[in-house]
Length: 136
Image (cartoon, rainbow, N blue to C red):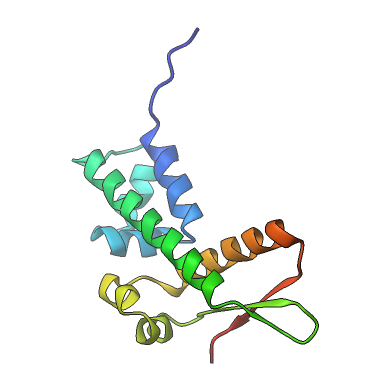
């Protein structure tokens, strides 16, 4: 049996993508430069404190889950029985609607990824058609 090793670079990349973030957005949330995230993901360098970075990712993952639940709670049905979910295309619009998003400077791309996850969960639960629209 071969010993499994922890791959920080792959873990970081997978978490970033699952949160709907690009490298620049994650870098801003971690208060580092984009090229730093790029080097971490490429395995060229590792953060001084990888545990601190992982803890921040876990925190963002918890927030992501909360956003998924918020999106589901705000779901509406149209006259044809389709579920309609609303997401944000502009950071500032989300920030106006959600203090936590504003305080954490979360990008709208994260809300969009959470909305897509909410759509998958709703569709899996009752095989209904789910559509996503932009907030106004």
